[in-house]
Amino acid sequence: MNPHRGNPEDITEAYYRGLMHSVGYRRKDLDKPQVVIVNSWTDVNPGHKPLRELSSYVREGIWAAGGSPAEFNVPAPCDGMAQGPGQHFILPQRDLISASIEAMVQAHGFEGMVMLASCDKIIPGMLMAAVRLNLPTLFLTAGAMMPCQMESRTVVTSDLKEAIGQRRNAEIDAATFLNWQERICGTSGTCSMMGTANTMGCFLEAVGLAPFGTATMLTFDAAKVRQARDVGEQIVSLVKAKRPLSQFFNENSLENGIKYIAASGGSTNAVLHLMALAALMNADLDLATFQKLQAAVPLVAKFKPASEFNLNDYHMAGGVPALLRTIKDALYLGAPLSMGGNLREVIDTFPEFDGRVIHSTSKPLDTAGCFAILRGNLAPQGAVVKKSGVDPKMQHHTGPAVVFDAEDDVRRFLLEKPVEPGSVLVVRYEGPKGGPGMRELSIPAAMLVGMGLHTSVAMVTDGRFSGATRGPCVGHVCPEAWDGGPLAHVRDGDRIEINVPENRLQLLISDQELQQRQKTAPVRPDHPAPGLLKAYRQNVCGADQGAIWI
Image 1 (cartoon, rainbow, N blue to C red):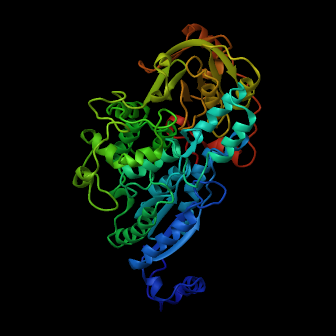
Image 2 (image 1 turned 120 degrees about the vertical axis):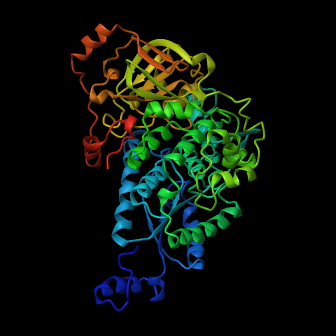
Image 3 (image 1 turned 180 degrees about the horizontal axis):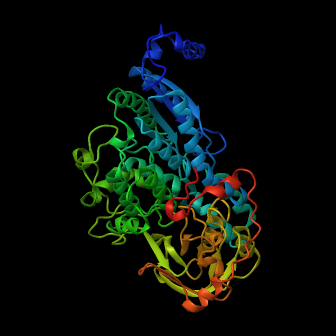
């Protein structure tokens, strides 16, 4: 309830009302439900550029339903643009976004929220704020970028990352590479692959917080305008009916969302974000429970870069609703949907799987989800790998460690030095505290693919990877090296075993040897943490708990 709402004759509210009148609200508007549009619009990156126009249609819907709309913006950094030094600031911004929304909404007393978001850390940050505020809340995403047709093939942004490795090996010439850079992002919208942006956008649909089709739809589809108006009208209905977020987003829907992501080949970053959400919800979820939930559903779909299919292919095959119908026996069907009804009432109206893009549960791509949570003496508190992107012959791999103390070092190594097949590249001090910021190692991982090494070389890090990563890339190793975790004590030449089927990550030295090494505190590298990053390093928790710092 807006704390300022009340009798206009109440002289104590005169100041508030005077300020609201100054920006165009009439007396009668102040007596309507006060709904805020939280917009992540920016013209700095393609995922968020369409949101300025989209917000105008949400406003129309709010006015039409008898509400009074307002709007403010939040930061919306792009993971892809922030590679290298900029990556230090990406994950910390998730919590900053959450905190800024909480502060603004609490200060102004808005009664309902429409979140306009698309990319990697923005959706999770908005979700975290929504959980904390527990107001009527709906989400709408910008939609997907149109895939690019180039040289008789369909390509998306992850193909460009992998082309870096091809260019390094001189498999493509400079002119071709520059042409790819210029053409591959042909429209605005989220990158048309199953990265973190689309994983989390689809998650919103799966848990009933966004209209079906919003994430997979091409951004310029006219249906997006109609969705925006529908969302504007529906949020006013939810406010009037006093239906907070917790009626739709609870432990049952969270479990549905985890199972959906596991079945659709989602991003490893989702594990990080869902652990954070679970902590804020006081949900009984740890990495072991996450592993059990995700393993309870088969993998029935994979998308670029792990397969030939892009997000538009997914949409045309029925998208999130079709996949939910495919795995319905594993879901809680009583989950209410914020746009109306519950999953049980509507699921049989969804399209059936097509068998090509979405497989049946009787003939899945894998019998147990897309992730594996690995443990062992190298990751006693867990590590994460997207097993659906790992070549079968690399599911169990043992090789000698080549150790780096920063992402920058491994990137230079891949550009300048030969890589021995069979190696395990260990990139440490890139965890939440060590980086600081838990940088994404998507470029080095993609370079390995482009260089043809993803079927012979593995990577292990306390940092993280893009949702668009393939190959044997193990991230989120906990405890991180900065906190003295075992990763800090790995030496060049040590043999490391990655056993995905058995969920094991092991440093192949004796317990006695590891204990002896751990008696000597490792020498931390010089990873500066100025300003914001200093506060982040001082307050952030481990990746296994969601890397929350605010």
